[in-house]
Image 1: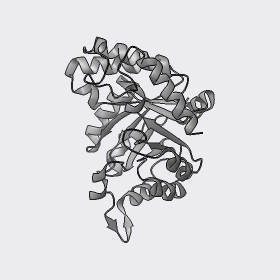
Image 2: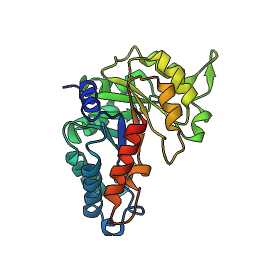
Image 3: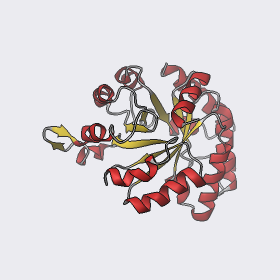
Image 4: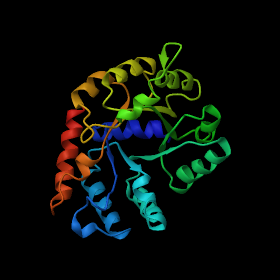
Amino acid sequence: MDTFEKLKKAQAKNSSILCVGLDVDINKVPQQFKSVPDGLLEFNKSIIHSTKDFVCAYKLNFAFYEQYGVDGYDLLKKTFELIPDNIVTIADAKRCDIGNTMTGYAKSIFDYFNADSVTINPYLGKDSLDPFFSYKKKMVFLLTLTSNPGSANFQRIESNGVPLYKHIVKQSLGWGDKNNLAFVVGATQPEEIDQLRSMAPNNFFLIPGVGTQGGSVEAVVKANANGPAVINVSRAVIYASKEKDFADKAREKAIKYKLSFM
């Protein structure tokens, strides 16, 4: 089964387009989980167990794991293995390099970690992306227009009257299809989500930035116009509470967001 089909099935089964970001932070987890890797793994296990019936995907931002070195990679690998087989995994790695280097990154993410999908920076162009697209059954999310304020520094620069982020979508549509090509568009950019949706009506959008980063649920849902999407929420779900009820509160938040996206 390819990732596109797996994602559609997960969304149908759980009636959800919610993705929970497992951005585990030792400074934010309850006291009993402040150890690496065992404590953080138990925290992730509890979050997954409490939310798995209400999500279609989990996103693992590699930075939150790589900072711990060998223990972090062990934590990352074991967290991937905790995620149910019917739920899509997104390796939020944002890799960007020349082709032969990207081949190594692709093997790491798709073969070693066995992720279903990955976020990639397209700045180096098509040849840098080919190693990831060679995995025909996987999905590649290209960073297109991000939710941070600094996105304007480069992503909105115009060439021939067209901003860079639109060039990314227009050119890359010929590099893959709806089964393996997808885009990252920040929730703080609803007007642009609407514009990009018209350019790529059949491709999945990964939309981060709802919750702590300030993206509006209502604006995102309206702009996306029922297009294929995964809306990510991280801190607002997994850190809903620092008390003993943290898993129950995460579950409540996941249900709330799931329903708000419908």
